[in-house]
Amino acid sequence: MSTATARMKYPRVKNYYNGQFVDSSSSADLDVVSPVDGNLLSMVPMSSTDELNAAVDSAKKAFPGWSSLPIKERVQVFFKYRQLLERDLDELTALVSEENGKTWEEARAEVDKSIELTEFACSMPQLVSGEILEVSRGVECRIDHFPLGVVASIVPFNFPLMVPNWTMPNALVLGNTMIMKPSELVPLSCQRMAELLREAGLPDGVFNVINGGKEIVEGICDHKDIEAVSFVGSTKVAKLVYQRSTQNLKRCVALGGAKNHLFVLPDANPTMTATNVTASMSGCAGQRCMAASAMLAVGNVDPIINQIVEEARKVVPGKNLGAVISPVAKDRIESYITDAEKAGAKILLDGRGAKVEGKEGGTYVGPTVIDHVTPDMSVAKEEIFGPVISIMRTDTVDEAIKIENENPYGNAASVFTQSGGMARYVMEHASAGMIGVNIGVPVPREPFSFGGWNESRFGANDITGKSSIEFWTKLKKTTTKWNPEAGVNWMS
Ligand code: NAD
Image 1: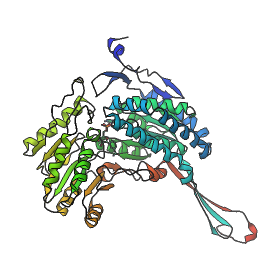
Image 2: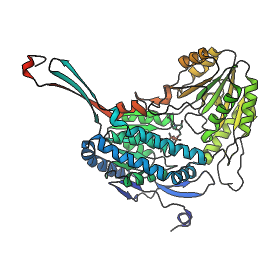
Image 3: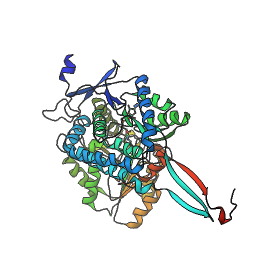
Image 4: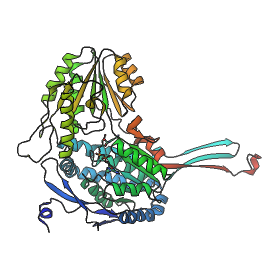
């Protein structure tokens, strides 16, 4: 055993297929490091395409048995899985927090959300009962949802447990079998998820996990036996995955990055606005695709900006602010702040150089509020993915809407105002898939579906909720005529 492996808190991450945890034969491993303190948690293999092929074979073998079970039987496994998530709530919270760096409360919310997603999947029998109608005397048309076959889910680092639970429960309850590709930065929660599914009684091969990077993602997009690919991650990779898998004639939904705008109007409730804006920009250290990143200050909202700075001062790295994922991420975020300063913006609160006593190896950035940003600056245009808010000042709501509309992303936008008319106006004109009114993080709860617009999502469906049913199934339309005495000769 090398010194590095001896220091590891957990054994090397395994792949999972045919119901077995398998040691990868790859010799290319990456360190899994906790952003909390820089400690080595584990090693993750960069698996080969042969290993991906073995996992797809396992999923393919499991498909006929799993898909032919009535949905009411399939769903029983997920009632049990939900119980296990609840049983292991503290353990899962600790794991998410240490591998991702988020605070205990944020990690706990992620497990709670995974439970809610599973509950939605458990309600699926009520949602997919199909349709039937007598279309002519004695002639009946019916529609049934059929599973697609082997499907894949490629996930990012920022929600190690929740994002896999966006896709896995719905896809499986609907009768598909799945290959999951975790983020190589946070592979431990997915491995634990596989253990829980096995304990819940999921048949072998229905759920499979292959660890790796680019090569595995490309292998998934190219694999002839994979019918559909869901992806969540950066826009750059979302485009590649969408193009490559649709080129190979697969279904694909690929969610990308974000630059979410908050419109703050002078009549907004100052305390509600300041607390919501601060929580949105700093929650999960700004590493949420729904995080507030740009604030459009319409007219004179100086008192609200002052209050935001006061609120943000209460957000302290290592206490109620978690770590960012890696030293690379910390450098990227800090250089955005430096670039804004050089370009003439005013830093009202500076999170650069944050250190947490006793956790010197951790990667922290403090909350950062930048004022007088102009739309041409990189902090105004690009996704920063850190606890940073860039304030742009406008005289009118239309000017603010123009800035928001010109940004290529379109995940979320929120408006803070007491005026129903203004809220409605922004809701109609913002170019984003998820809108908040006096809400900093407007995530639609189940059964409403999650998905952005523009370069924040490629493909026709949202990834959760009712919209995902269309993605994970194909419709079969059957027309039946049984009673000759009806005397109908309809399309005989
Ligand atoms: P990422 O794009 O770097 O990685 C996502 C997945 O793609 C990982 O599994 C990774 O292994 C793989 N990957 C990375 N580079 C690749 C390449 N060149 N070719 C093929 N595969 C590759 O994203 P991330 O850094 O893990 O996550 C953060 C990003 O995800 C942010 O942009 C964030 O906005 C976005 N995100 C979006 C949503 C949404 O709902 N729109 C949700 C969560 C995260």
